[in-house]
Structures are given as C-alpha cells and as structure tokens.
Amino acid sequence: QVQLVESGGGLVQPGGSLRLSCAASGFIFSSYAMSWYRQASGKERELVAVIGSSGSTTNYANFVKGRFTISRDNTKFMVYLQMNSLKPEDTAVYYCKLPGLTTPLRRDYWGQGTPVTVSS
Image 1 (cartoon, one colour):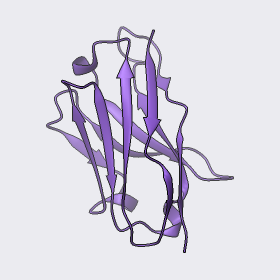
Image 2 (cartoon, helix red, strand yellow):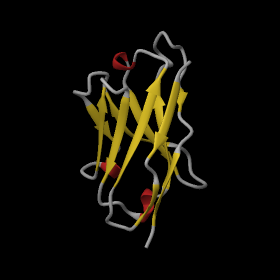
Image 3 (tube, one colour):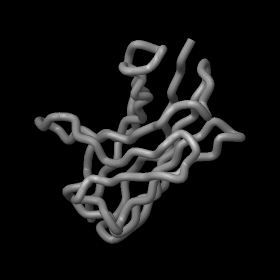
Image 4 (cartoon, helix red, strand yellow):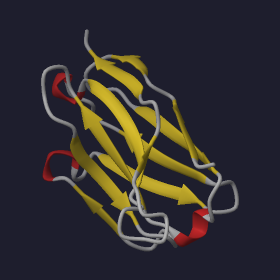
C-alpha cells in the first residue's frame, strides 16, 4: 500500500535551515508528481511546493519562493524540501502529499507530517 513518511522537522532559529525528507513506497514513484503542504496551528493546510514526476518542473507558493527548494530522487523514492532563511511564520506541520485523485490511484495520499518550529 502507499506509504509516505516524512522526517527532518525540528526546532530552528530564524534565518536557519532545515531539510525535510519524504520516503515513498507502494506505488510507481517516478510516475507521479509530489508535493509538500503545511498547516500552522489554527490555519488551513496550504500548498508549499510541487515537483513533477521527473523532477524537471517545480512550482512554489509565493511565500516560499527563493527560500525553499523541492527536489526528488527517483532512484531512492525520496522527495525533499530544503528550507532556507526560515521565518517564525514558517512554523507548521509539513506534510508530503501524493496527488493521486486525478490519476489511476483515484485518491490523494498524505504522510503523517513532521513539525517545524522556527523560534529564537
């Protein structure tokens, strides 16, 4: 079955960096786009970044452009989110998502999330 397992979250000071990882299994990883979302306390979940199946196309939310980089390794079934110049407003639980609703998978899949806290 499809599994997405995030890791790499933690406490970091403003201006610092973190790299989140998402380990995928149970589907043909190289055939699907992948994305990162985040949800801050009391707020709705929001899209952070998307990467195409080959890794050649990426899109970012305006609030992370120039600071975050999404990447993937199709040989290791991994998706990454490199987060630089972190701000307190980046504090949230970060989720890896397989957007499978419009594909033969017929549904989206989510990981359990990894918390990121940006604070001094």
